[in-house]
Image (tube, rainbow, N blue to C red):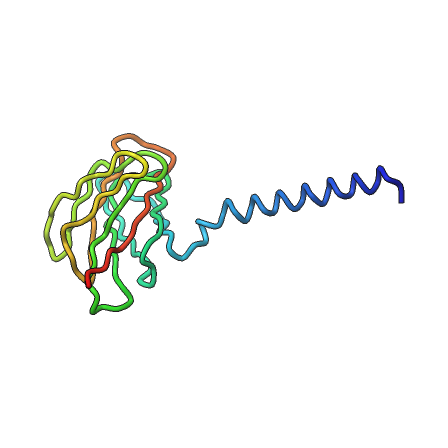
Length: 152
């Protein structure tokens, strides 16, 4: 086999490897069990219920074409443990508003505005429900980090 064919084959195999690596890494958050990816479309004025994986203590909320509102349910796999929820901006527009609606309440939660900042609920419970309103303008996606902060 000639030197040119060997280099050509190496370039081809390297290209295939890089394409596959890019596909795996770009979809890793999509398949992460701790990524909350709302299914369906909440129209303006409607609410879509979504649930976090109760085995996750942190992850992402990946909301494509956000419209309407999400009622986001957080639970722990251990119902005896109490926690609060913290949300932080990662990519895209921030939410219009966040309310802690746990136990029928309607308490505002500060909306984090800048990447690297977060805000947390005042409520500490074994289940926390947040009502999140979409950004004021239609955007492709929002990606926010969440974490459960357990109280011991």
